[in-house]
Length: 205
Image (cartoon, rainbow, N blue to C red; front, top):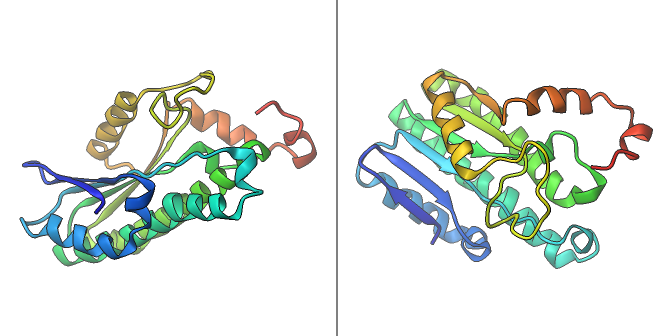
């Protein structure tokens, strides 16, 4: 079963291990249990498996695992949550995407492509649910100093999980639907999206 934590504030956190994410049959059961106690105001979908970037594009099993954990599981849960929140006519779905999905880099393109898919799906889901009283917040963090990035060299504009949580809280209070963490990354990524491909591939990123 996916790790699901219900709180008096009607908060649902969805994440977990690779096995949990790939156990598709458990997703509906988890959602049923979470909503059995009443409406959910905020649901956070947070899956992230980085993997070995060079191995990922040469190992079909690892590539499939990354796709299932980082993309398929969030999409499946997003649809399930969308149905429930549409029925209750309110609530927030918070999807943790990544700046890695804004413009996929050669250095980690399998991971980046999964986050690009997540980003696109939840932006679209937000549009689909708007008229039903449900909001979707897409969060694009940069390098987060967490268990997933343990052992990797820290880079400029790195943040902590607490930084991301604070930004999400502020975004929900401000009724925003898309944020970068830190906010400076919005400007950085806006520039990178427009760099010509021959030049982009030469950048040390």
